[in-house]
Length: 431
Ligand code: ACO
Image (cartoon, rainbow, N blue to C red; front, side, top):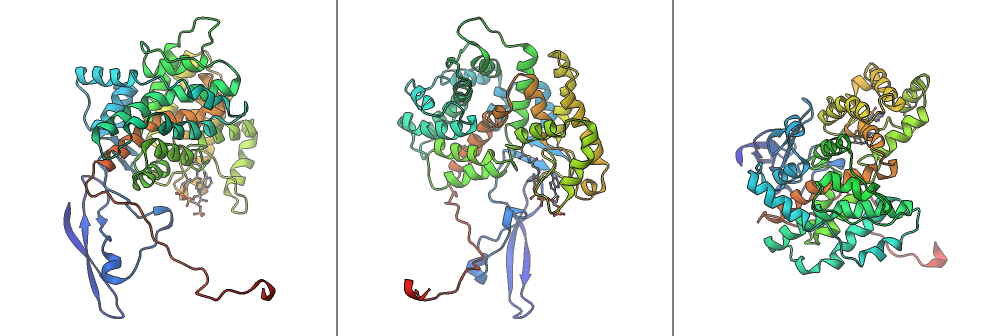
């Protein structure tokens, strides 16, 4: 991996350190500073990891300046057009698109793990009736290690594979149960003759009193959204999963940690926040004051669904979702959704505003996804849960990749300490 080197020199002492430079297949060259402390006694400082590659990975590549997203080298646009979410999951986990028999075998493995231990039912009912479904998700997914401890040896590749299938298969069942608990309806068991998305919609929306068949437009829309959300290299939640896993923690605990991180409004929680923001804006006339509020440095408000750490161009996922919004809303007979019209107008106004132009702030994946979820009848409290279902595949792929890496070590960042220097204890009567 090392192609050349970079010399760092201290002008005061004239000391020089030669740092190896790694060049991946694509992307910026990377300075290897792993021996910097040993060689110089210095740390590097990079809050928010703006210039730091935390690992090497061959799963997903983003070119933020060009607005490019590749899964295992394949452009997201091509995968979105041709694949099912399960096919993309196979690709992310295994590195190659499946042959027909590989896809059938993979699907069968996922399908045979969709049920959850029956005792988990009482776990759900222990939550308050109005618990946020993401709160239930964090607890329920974390609890899986208590139910599936037959395969928790993270150093055994067969155990890892089984845990991967279990996580991808059970997450929709758990998500639907979180929703059913929230609305006071009975849990619906998975049906293995249905595809991944149709099964999820059925577990969320069917009731024992009448038959249910998921609408084709809804299934296709959900499939697309899940593909677009499946992975996004070293984002906050994936890095959380990796850091948690680096200690050897079990995968259910690590994915629960990823879900907790995803919930934040600066990350996956933004899709829920976008819809509240659009509802609050209400009409086109109010867009101006909201844009002013987002630009005001004394106001913590930000335009939700806008901006991205990596994309300094249109997020390709947002572009795809925006394109299918019309199709989905038309297909579901909801073509006049005022929130979509409002979102389009908000985007148009923001993209002409100097503040957003200068900072290269564009709509991100969450700006339009909530509009589709809403059209599918999914309540806003479930938006981030939907994101978590799709991203579980990415989290699991990263976990599998790092656990198979013989060079894997515990993640342990250092710090720039700026607290008190050593001082002596002062008794209570002297403080
Ligand atoms: N509205 C208004 N101003 C913004 C916004 C926004 N949405 N996003 C960034 N800015 C401004 C910042 O105030 C900052 O301005 P300054 O240079 O004058 O100080 C500049 O743009 C750069 O922003 P940072 O916060 O430094 O960028 P960072 O990479 O740390 O944050 C983030 C990225 C968290 C996504 C940010 O853009 C944001 O909060 N967006 C809104 C929340 C959101 O949509 N999150 C979803 C992200 S996608 C995902 O996780 C699935």
